[in-house]
Image (cartoon, rainbow, N blue to C red):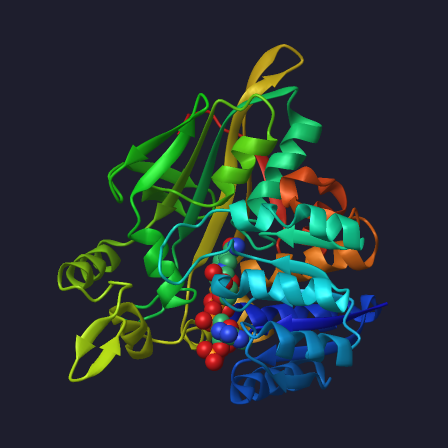
Length: 399
Ligand code: NDP
């Protein structure tokens, strides 16, 4: 039995708390901590409504390492599930080291002043965690997260050699808003407006933002236009999947979404540097976030499905193979169960499962790990058990 502190009372945090409650005795003491107590109260109310169980709540600024360390010590935290923002990864890792708690996040470190998305500063903590006998799991969401575990599963069971990986991500849902993001708007827009790149033969090939488009047939959804993006799991998979020659990431966007984004970019509303306005410094993307719908609250009328998976090519028993491993999630089902939409759901479920892997000792090696470095089998079993069933099919067409 482990004491867990979940940091971040947004959409993903809402699902993570529900799922920790559902996991029963694995987690003895549950606490949700976030910047605003009022958000924690909303989430605790949802958990009471769905499960009849109360959850402790605390207010904390997770970028304040000392305040967070005090909280973790007071709660006797064994595991921290960090589902606040990537800006806080390093301060939370420091607090975990100081308080003797295992650490887990769903997105890699991001400095507020540069949109970069790279694992370097977190990988550099490996020896600190190893020496402290603590485990840190990086990227235990859906992508990164489930997609990394799918690759580990393919490597263990389906292939003798993996040549290429195409990660495919489709949200075919409709939330009814003219423009909204499915997770934190600031992080989401920073990610999408970056130049693209992909990995090939040991090199990173640069592309313009959303320069490459392909129509991909997504199981359970049908053909959709998807765009090549850089996504953080490419960095760790390139490092950890032996011999892989190419890794790409494809995500779908509607025409309406792209038109809104283009206009916002053209007028400077996605800028991340401060702009002086009437004597105040304003960061346009932060102001934009204040105007956009809250991703934790767009679930009510959301309809449709998501499909996220990996198309993997390689060789098994001397024969070439192409497999697709994927999950379909449904916005309405996710909302009924947790009060959050499917993008939060597909991230919050694996966040809980990662913590469960640590709590049960399946993934307890001291150090800092990406999920493809760990045994995929117990995690894959729990995906089926906790609401993200997966499938493996042969895929005739290459991406
Ligand atoms: P939200 O913006 O809905 O929620 C973030 C929460 O963190 C908010 O409650 C916010 O508080 C809180 N928070 C922000 N800063 C601090 C701080 N300094 N201290 C304490 N709490 C803080 O985001 P989501 O729930 O949509 O996303 C959460 C994380 O999940 C993000 O890092 C995102 O990148 C990641 N993600 C990962 C995915 C994956 O597949 N791996 C997919 C989707 C998301 P307040 O309410 O006061 O603003």
